[in-house]
Length: 186
Picture 1 (cartoon, one colour):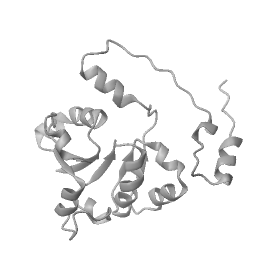
Picture 2 (cartoon, one colour):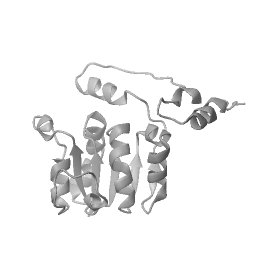
Picture 3 (cartoon, helix red, strand yellow):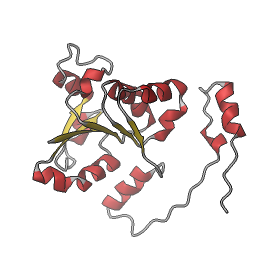
Picture 4 (cartoon, helix red, strand yellow):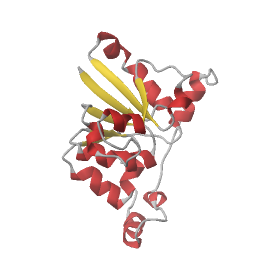
């Protein structure tokens, strides 16, 4: 049985769980969802996932302090980790998942803009898998659709590399992004 940990269980995490329902029903897959506040999820459908918070995950890993910072040992029970919680969670938990030797599917690609986080995510021994085509706010659209508030949505998006510049970046990194030119499509 494959064990999957979802980092985050908002609209995107719940959608992923729904998509995995055939595998969950067949017993080929075990799904755990890590959330920041378990109580907020009590009234929501879990779609077959066991919903835990960080102290409980640390406790399940057998670590002594359930309020400790993320440790690679937290991820020993899982075959793959899928991040769907946003850049801050990806930066906080992703490096520990990679250090545990686990594959990490990263949806919040903005986490790679921070040099320290990028290095930690690319160092291994786990493998980083970066999704493409992620669209900010997709979770909001999914939630609106689940509430019956949308009939259809069309999205066209583009972003210049300079739009990735953040205040915490070194001037060298910011200048590198400013120097990137859009690719011309023929």
